[in-house]
Length: 184
Image (tube, rainbow, N blue to C red; front, side, top):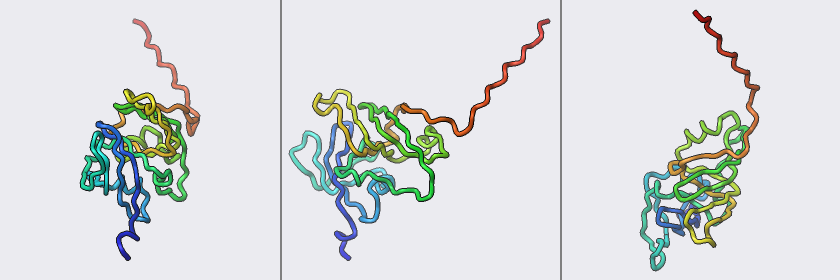
């Protein structure tokens, strides 16, 4: 089989500190794009890219992975992660704060893992579904964008807000009142 039949081109837009970079990545056909992205080294090598302020597409470009704050696939299906079969999942409504703005959306985690623990132990890209991207300082027409799926670089997140709280797995017991010391 030729390499073209074993791979596919995934067109995306990558938000960097310099702006949006439209580009495409060559990904193995049987691998989800988000899983592939999580397993790349310190650099990403798109097969083609258009640099902000540049004159057109460049064919040779390497991007520091940590500079890629958001990755938005053109096709929503490319944002989907491989499912964990048999594991109960829980959905959270959250907002992720980045230095360039706020991304709101739905995040799925394993049901038995607290949101904070899951985020602290997830070093790659976090998938937010039905995401709204609100960029600070962007032109008004592009300041708020809606996407079916957005991959957020967890290393670039500076804060997390959970909009809807789930009930605790077990009822919390009230702490006993502190014992009073006798006065002397």
